[in-house]
Amino acid sequence: MENKIIKLIKKKDHRGIDYIVDLYSDKISYIVNSILKGYSNKEDIEECISDVFISVYNDIHTYDNKKGKFETFVFIKAKYIALDYKRKIIKKKEYEKIKEDRLLKINKYSL
Image 1 (spheres, rainbow, N blue to C red):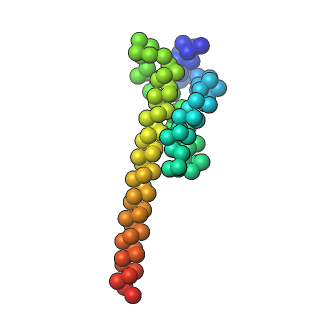
Image 2: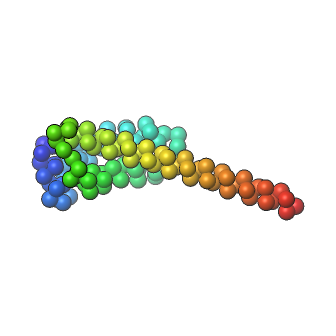
Image 3: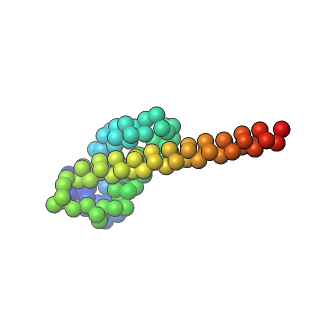
């Protein structure tokens, strides 16, 4: 089954993504949710999961069956994409906090 999926994706046949969604969406959702839980909202999690599928589709040429199973390739992508999302979310929250602190100081001194 993995070989069929890989061939479809390499041919840019969208049925390959359908197979990935059917086979791996539960595990990908679990990985993403476990990493982003407490850091993001439902929409961010859904976007991250979608990005995993898009990344697998776009980066299929980097998969090497001599290095491991296709599902491992998919799950590792899910892990690292979720970690990237987490870093971005944390960075954004830190930036918003700094911005808020500056506004409070400005307001304090302008009174």
